[in-house]
Structure formats: structure tokens, C-alpha cells
Image 1 (cartoon, rainbow, N blue to C red):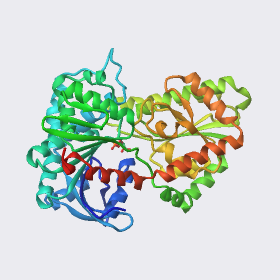
Image 2 (image 1 turned 90 degrees about the vertical axis):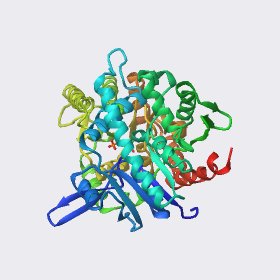
Image 3 (image 1 turned 30 degrees about the horizontal axis):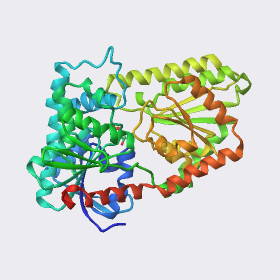
Image 4 (image 1 turned 90 degrees about the horizontal axis):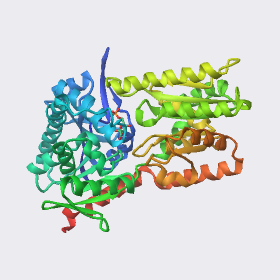
Length: 489
Ligand code: F6P
């Protein structure tokens, strides 16, 4: 690990969230890949983490501390400072439930049906100004206050919730070292024209206020550099990977996020996972096709069930012997598009099950709950791991599950998932819209020779072990040192 540094990490979801229990308060680990990935940062550096107060108890903690940082400890006992920002509740609702998800999330995953949606009306403009911009101001204010106390700290913004904050900070702290990692795809420049000029420009100018801007794949990086020229009039130098805008230069980099393989080795051997695995082994079909996702439209779950239906239609000889297990974590249910998608998932699974179920065999087993232990148990047991995302920044399931799998399972992987850029050569590639192709891939995976299955799985494992999350973090810290702000341009 590199030298200890002072870092200010800024993300909407924090590393812990508080809940009130009868005899006090407990801190629970915040969910999501980003938070897990950043954990080792806390273990090796002096980190102040700024995040939104999300639960009622988070708000109490924020109020008690006068919205200053409190001392916290990570899972391994490493200390860090946590500063929770209690945004005004209506502003936060507009920020999270109207602008960030769905507007930006849908745009960046190409999910809008442009003949019908979205409509940029007064409500959206209001949510943008009074919600998204205001919450970003709250974050910027907190960052500036922290920088006053520790001016040498580098600031790490994360994701699509915080596109405006870097510029707001830059205006008040011109010499601060700012980096931003975007964890989701950056769409092609024309697609940004779904948003009015003022909004798309503010997004690009906001991000361009950073010294370093990181993406998971070359594709998203290229799209960003092109869009920065088109939308914000920036000058992109594709050879050096820098973008000039006004009097500033930003370094634009590619670092695919990864996982901590050691953590999954430990989890796989832990008693809760072993118990869940025993229970799964009791009821599992002869061959198991697994998917693990949030119930997000970008994950393409409904088409995945159709593909499985087509497979079953073409292979009656495999009925009662093959089953699909879908471990789905309910996500963003205050947003109508997400609530409707969950309904569509349930309807589709029911339709396929009604059509094929027989003698106690249920073709699709739907587990709709946040059940990480159960998911890791299923990771060990799959014969096929099915990832058919419409678009996905990375997809960490594709990296996590092969690490612990014990059945030489085959990865079926969408060509539009960021993970495909790294793992595609060892996976069966599918186009997310081609349900016939996905059905064919399921058949191919289930009938692949053992040796070939093992060869592919071992190659995926070796890649993930070599390119783990510690490497991801080190690369970004190294970027800070070679950023134009540090070396001059
Ligand atoms: O980058 C996408 C991401 O922020 C992931 O880190 C996380 O798994 C997911 O979205 C969860 O989103 P939310 O915070 O809305 O639950």
C-alpha cells in the first residue's frame, strides 16, 4: 500500500447507516458495491467520509453532532470520520426519486423509451433546481468546511448523484485536488440531448471541475470525452487522455472496479453461508441457472425470464431437471418505474411457472429480498450464472460469484456490462435484447464439456484475483499524483 493520505470521500450512500433499537443505536453497514469497494481505503488512509443522512436515526446523529464529523470504525476496527449531511426532506426526495433515479440513471443506461418518455416539464426542472442542485450544494458546503480544516486532503466524489458538487467546491477552493469516479455508463453524446442544454451542460461542466475523472471502461471514457466536447465545448485529447475546459485540464482515466477475493473466500466458509448452502442443496434442481440482481430495469430480468422460457420450450427433455434461481434485492421502490418493474418481474415469473411447472418442479424460483448470505450460498452452487444487463457500469456479481463457485459454473454475460471488457473472452457473450440468443447460450452453457467449463472459470478467477479492489484503489491514488494539478500542464 502507498503512504497514508488524507482523503475526503463523498458519496450519497454512506459506509454505515444508523438504526434505533430498544436499548440504543446500532450502526449497520451501508449496502451496495461502492461502499464495499471503498472499505479498504478506510483501512489504509485517514478518511473523512461525507454521505447523506438516510434513516431517521442518521438524522438524529447528524443533529447531535451539529452536522460535523463523528468518529466511526470500519469492520476491521480502523477509525474514520463520518459526516452525515441531513438534507431537507423534500429536496432529497426530488434529488433521489426524480432526478438521480430515474432521470439520470435511466438516461445513462439507455432506458428511456424516447417516443414516450421522459417529459422534461416544470416538475423536472423544479426537482433539478430545488432538489438535485440543492442537495449537491449541501455536499459542497460540507466538503468546503472539511477542506478548511484539512486543506491538503484530496476529495473523492462518487457517482451520478454528485455531478454538480465538484464545480461548487472548485469555486470556493480553487486549489483543492478533486477526483470523481463515475460508476455507471456514460452514454453517447446524442443521448445527452434528451436533457435541455442548461442541464446537460451543467452536468458536464460540473464533472469537468475535477482534476481526475475515472470510469470502469474505455467505452464510457470515450463517450465522456466526446460528450464533454459536444456539450460543454471542451477540448479532448484522446492520445493523452486529458480534457481542457476553460483554464483547467482534467485527466480522464479507466479503472475497472473489482472485489476483495479474500472476503468472499471467508464468506464462503462462514457458518451462515454454509447453513444457507445446505438448505439450497436440499432443494436445488440437477442443474441450476442463477441470477443475482437488484430489481432494476437495467438488469433486464423480465427478458431473462423470457429467454429461460424459450430454452424450456426448446428442451422439454430438461424439464424438472433444470431450474432458474433469481435472488433479487428490491430496489428504489418509492420510484414508480421501479415499483412497476418489480410487478413485471413477478408477473413474468408467474407466467413461465404456470406454463411449465409440473410434479412439484418450479422452473423459476423467485427470492425477492436483500439476502446477501443466501446469494453467496447460491454463488457456490450455480452451474450457469446469468448476467444479461441492458447496460451496466460494471456488474460485480460477474466477479464475485466465480470466486467461490464449486461446480465449474459458466458465466453468461451481456456484451453491454462493463465486466464484459475484462471477462468477455471466458464468458458466453449475449446481446441483452436477443432473447433467442440468450436461450441458446443457456443450452450451450448447460451442455459444455467439463474441462472447458473449468478452464473458463479458472481464467475468470485468476483475472479477478490479480485485479482486485486493492489494485483499483491504488491506481486511483496514483492518478492523483499524475493529475495535471499536481504535475502542472
Ligand atoms: O454505482 C451504482 C450504485 O451506486 C452502486 O454502488 C450500488 O450498488 C447501487 O447503485 C445502489 O444504489 P442505491 O444507493 O440507490 O441503492
